[in-house]
Image 1 (cartoon, rainbow, N blue to C red):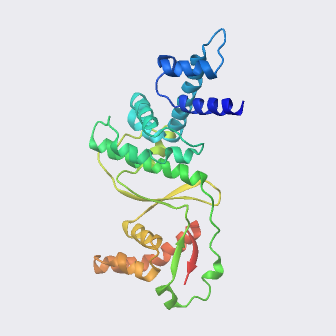
Image 2: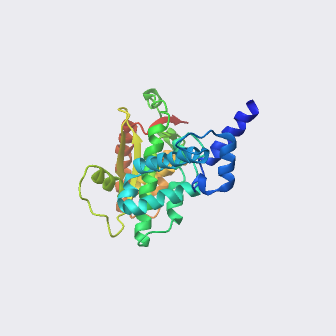
Image 3: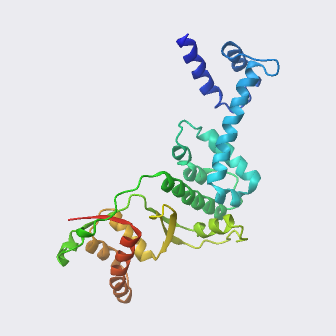
Length: 275
C-alpha cells in the first residue's frame, strides 16, 4: 500500500538519525517490528539499527576526510568526540555535503574539549580554511574577464569603475597559517603545532587547471581586495586603504596597486569592470 510505504520511509529516515541503538528503545523496536521484516540472524530492530550505525559511520568518515587539519590538531580520540558532537548538533538533513559541513567553523567556536584558548583559535581557523576548500571544490565557475573591458578606459573612469571579483574567491583573515600547516601535515612533514598566533591574510581560489591555490597577501593588499569586494570603486578603495598610513606607506601603496591589479587579473580573480 502507498500509505504503508510512505510510513515505512518516514520511519526509517527518522530512525537512522537516532543516536542510541534502536533495540534499546522499546517504542522504536516495536515500530521496527511493524514496518520491517527480520530474519534468522537479525530482529527487525537490529536490521534498522544496522542502517543507523552505517549512517553515522559514513558521515563521520566524511568529516574526517575533509577536515584532516582539524583532526591533526585534536588527535584521534578528541576528533572522534568532535565529530559525534557535531553530528548530534547538526544531523545531516540533505544529500549535499556542502550544507552538512557549513556549520563546522561556528560549531568549533563553541565546542568544548580544547586544551587552551589558543588551540580553540587554531581549530576554528583550520575549520574555516577546510570549509572554504570544500566550497571551492563544488562551486560553479564564473566567466573570465573580457580584456576588451579594459581597452580604451579613460583614466578618470577608474574613479567610478567597480571591480567585480570572482565569486569563488575565499578571503580569510586568520590568526594561524593553517594553509601551510595542513599542506605539511598531509605531505607527511613533521610541522609542529604552533604555540603562538602568526596572523596571515589568505586568498583561496580555483585556477584554470581546476586545482585550488592560495596566495598570502599583505594587510594593505587584503584590505584593498575586501574594499573592492564590497563594491567600492578602485580609486576610492585605494584612498580608504591609505587612510592612517604613513606618507611612506601611502607612496608604497600607490606604487603597488598596478602590479596587484595585473596579478589579480592574471589569477582570474577579476571577472568584470562595471562603470
